[in-house]
Every structure is written in C-alpha cells, then in structure tokens.
Image 1 (cartoon, helix red, strand yellow):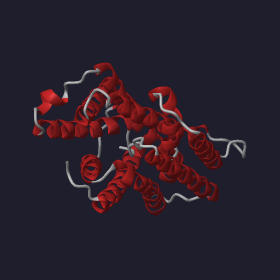
Image 2 (cartoon, helix red, strand yellow):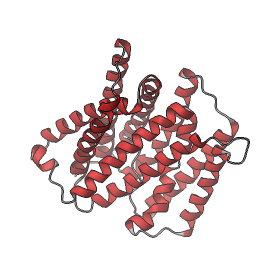
Image 3 (tube, helix red, strand yellow):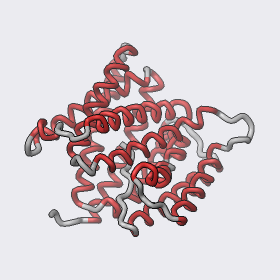
Image 4 (cartoon, one colour):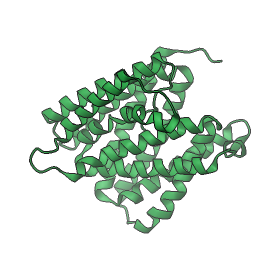
Length: 296
C-alpha cells in the first residue's frame, strides 16, 4: 500500500478544482458560439482517447479494463454522466458560471439524501437537518416567488441531481467492478453516445475556436489525471472538502472574464449550501462512509 501524503493530496485537489473551473469557462465560451452537443461530443472524443490510453498502460490492458460484471449499469452510468455534462454546460450559457456553480454545489447534499434509497445506507437526523438547511440555501439562490422566476434557474439543479445519481451508481458499481473498469466505461460509453447524438449538430468552427477546443480537451484530460494522482496519494475523505474551491474559482472566472455579477442572495445561499455540504462530508467521514466524488 502506498504511503499517504495528505498535504500533497490537498494541493493536487486544489489544482484539480482550478483546472475544472478553467475547463468550465472554456466550455461556456464554446457553447455560446456552437451547439452544446457538438462541443461535448468533441470533448468526449478526447476523453475516450485518454481513458483508452490509461487502460492500455495498465496490467491486463484494455481487455481487463472492459471486463465488467454489470455492463447494463456501466452503460447507464456513462450515459447519465454525458447527459449531466450537457445540462451543466447549458446552464453555463443560460445562467453563467457564478449561479450555475452556486446551485450545483448542492450535489453532495443530494448524494446524502439519495444514499438511502439507492444504496440502502442509513441517513441520520443530523445529516437530514444539514440537507434541509442546504436546500434552504438553494431556495435563497433561486428566489422562487420573487419577481418572475426563471425556469432556466433549475437547469444546474437538474445537473446536480444527475451527478449525484451518477456518483451513487459509481459507488454501487464498485461493489463488483474496479475503479479502472468504471473509468473505462464512463469515457467510452459517453463518447459513443455523444457521437450518435452530436454528429447531427455539427457546425463549422473558426480556426481560433479550434484552439480553444484543443485547450478544452487538454484541460479535461489533465484534470482527470490530477484527480487520479490526488486519490493515489491521499484519502478521499481528507481532500474532499477542498473540492468546493471549484465554486470560488469558477465564480472569479465568471466575473473577471464574462462580466457576471455576484448577487447578495447567491453569495448567502452558496455559503449555506457549502456549509451544509461540508457538514455532510464530516458526518460521512466520522461514520466511515465514502464521500461523493468531485465533478468531472
């Protein structure tokens, strides 16, 4: 067993969340100019190539990485994540990075709420209280009933629900398949699905935007590499709270590059959501349950 290096793991998680935020900013830029499905399709092509390359370099190669005992579940996981990525990028276009990430920060609370029906885990009253408080924060962000409620405001919430379910199914799949197998099926299934859908929405891309697309693909691969290294050197429970740094990183990018504003209700609501999420992570750690994975 490798020696744990929590300090290095924390720095790797900080780097991972920073790269994820940059990746989201590039996704927003491209999705404002081109069809979301095409952008995600090209990103998945590169992701699949990365996954296959990683699998080929492991013991047993691609054959071992593809050897799942539950193909139906693995395919559904891959489809779910691809759909979630599309919905989240659409949220970036409709709402911006600041508000999308503020709402999406509720996904660990959704994981906690759904862990009972999906995994059969017991959720105590303390975590249910944190979940309730967290969703008060989401309501503060969305402000239903104040003025004209924007239906688009629920888009990142749908993405958070999809990612929470994906995370729980990943945990469920781990009972019979290794992480390498799940990783392989996530990339390849998503690439096939996005190709079948996205190819019908192909648009000519300007030369400078191909450069941005290339950077998007590289940041996607690099962020996953950083995340893999992070979990190799440190326990997930020790580094998971630092995954919330993606919210301020993305918010800063949205305000500095895209001219977004941070409204008071969004700041207050996000603080409540993050606080409740950190409490659920602490409870998960104290009870020995694995924490939810950070966004990919």
